[in-house]
Length: 290
Image 1 (tube, rainbow, N blue to C red):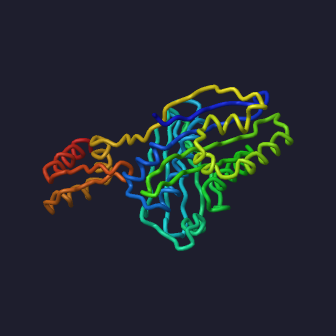
Image 2 (image 1 turned 90 degrees about the vertical axis):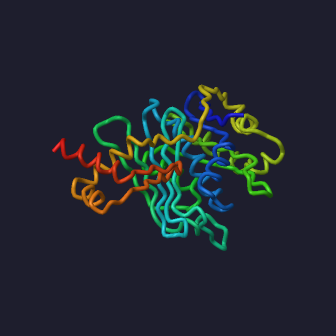
Image 3 (image 1 turned 135 degrees about the vertical axis):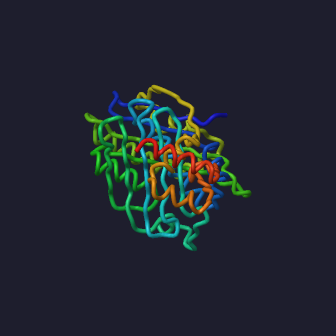
């Protein structure tokens, strides 16, 4: 079954609900980035959050970059998501570990940065200190403080004995203008009553069951369901442009030293090999432009 993100509204369109099943996605990034159990949880939460946040994009080409930068063992990790339901991510230390087994200690102190490229002249970047260190809490804090949109995010993963992900789901709730504070309190209590999403998954429930439990009496209405997938848009042509951008002197140095270049994509692990002859052609191309 394909991973999906679900967009819905409730309570007379004053509550925005975004939910998703990212089981395949998280298993894919676990294998692609060679994650351990703890980094699977951390990076899986980031990617699942990004899948939901993608639904706040207005059009398919809108891009949001989410980056956690901390002084803990994981160092930094980021996700890039588009309005078309595709996303990709990077983690600097996929084998990071901490004896406390707490995400807060794994990430450490630092900052959360969110950059939005909405096709305008300049992208917008917001930055807040890491507040909780559990990813969901920090993203909720960002939207509540930086965008004045009260937000709650909850993510659950069922990690199997073989360390594969049996299920990964997420729920993101935002209170829109005109919402009732009492409704916000009720939703908050239900998040607590829900307990661990993981325990619900172990009972055989799916994301639709959880949505009905939380919002059935609030007139929930599903607006859209969309497939989501991991997709990197790198290409040899883009890597060529990146090599050209280093300048004539750097390219000439590579040519003179008879070197070859191996460029490695952090997002999809694709390797692009450029022989010295390839570099020479790029150098000559740049010379002609100057």
